[in-house]
Image 1 (spheres, one colour):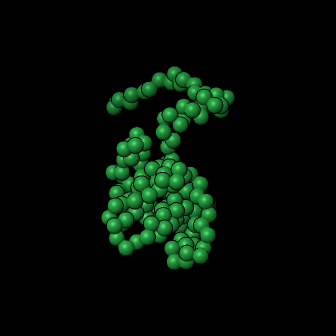
Image 2 (cartoon, rainbow, N blue to C red):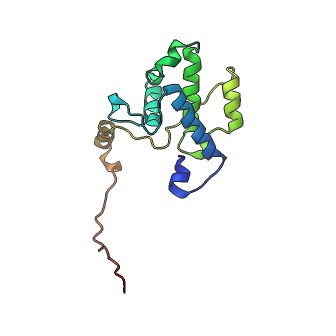
Image 3 (cartoon, rainbow, N blue to C red):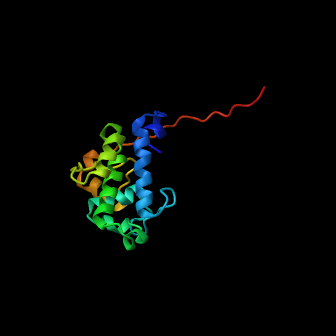
Length: 155
């Protein structure tokens, strides 16, 4: 589900692009987004795992072994992962149009832009702690809300 729909109920053509990107990543990995868990990275979901592996240069680790044993080339599959990641970028305006996606899929001469982190990207806890240790001034200060909770009762 696209973040703009999940958070604000906004639907646009870019919402469909997001869903298409998730579908591409599901096909390439052979796993559903809602049931995918990356054993090496503490339960990462499919989108987070695909981004992390692509960013680290290990995107082949999420590819379904059945695809690798078929006729598809590794370069074609990696291109599909790249396009899928472009479709699931957090900012809807950064996502390509479906016309652009079709062009990217059908023309290998098209240079693909570098995707930004996807929606729902969750850095693992050790990365998060290290980023806070490097810049403690950037950490979020939380306040406690002592509001009471009312329980309505019928008349």
